[in-house]
Length: 466
Image 1 (cartoon, one colour):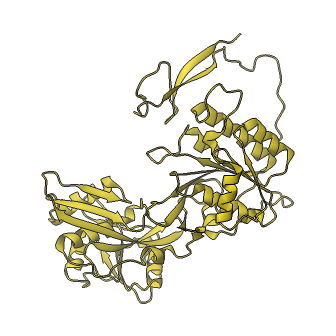
Image 2 (cartoon, rainbow, N blue to C red; image 1 turned 135 degrees about the vertical axis):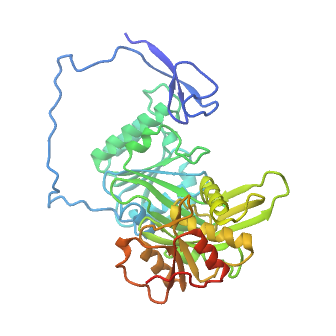
């Protein structure tokens, strides 16, 4: 007879400890260890004489009689992020901050699918059925044929899936689900892992596309075991600042499509609306001829995106000047400031520096280095950046400006929005054969000194592209 064993599992990283401690040795989180009881009997191998069933092996080629048809919601921004629609049997994990709009996004999506004749079920473990109905009425989707339920028992949910043919299933949220055979509280690492495993195994066998809503920690990561992100097919993050109306749906893992795709939405009284041209939206309130402002032409997946970079350099009233960043990497700002001081002779050490990516979007692409440097130089020297210019390029530690991928797509987006100039890194040899952009004067810079000279001369041409 096996004996019960008590172990202490970190609810942030999933590390297992023999004894309780105030701090997790693996991730450094305080007060995150919770006791979980499990059987400690001897491990059972395959040497008991029982033979398993042989697997049915198939080939790689898809049979013509069984094509894979994606479930398209009709929300272009949502379908873009998922790779063109939902694949039957896929498991999608959606994470985001509390109140950012995760439930609203999924409710709008399943309502759109239900109106196309698909069987959609929305199971909430956090809200009552009437609360979900009130949200649907506020969104103007109360007439959508979506089946609702409020449940947290995985056994009951599994019985519902097996008895009825469900095309799309929403579990809101996975941290509230529990398996009655596991002696742990809902939301613990063991419960989350076991509940997700049971539901994913069943829905894949039944061909049901399943959404799991996941809570996030204070660091912005999905709470629970890290293995949860490995179990699902797609991991989506719903980002945004609740002080802004913009919301970004970003994919970080997708077995059925490209990663690093984004969808842009705008939160309003009637829910989330798609933004077909996010570049124009992010630049709609930009003020011309303002110091410390530069436009970055970036790429988010396959989509070019123009964002305003704002910088402010102010005298430091105290001994240690502040470095504050919103929407960008703090360490990368420190590197750009060090390069500007060491390689270009521009002194920022006695000033406070504030950097902001306007619109509440977060940029992680190294190509934003040149735009950040332009905004910092403009803020320090008190000279506006030419408002008709866009910037992109990666900056090295020696001050050189390196080429980035897909320069012509960035420039075409800039020309479409009315920009007439671009300050970019010198093209690679593989990019020399690209076609010219009509109506766009392009300056190629090799070093940050060239950028400083360009801004000092107010847009004079240090080196035009051939």
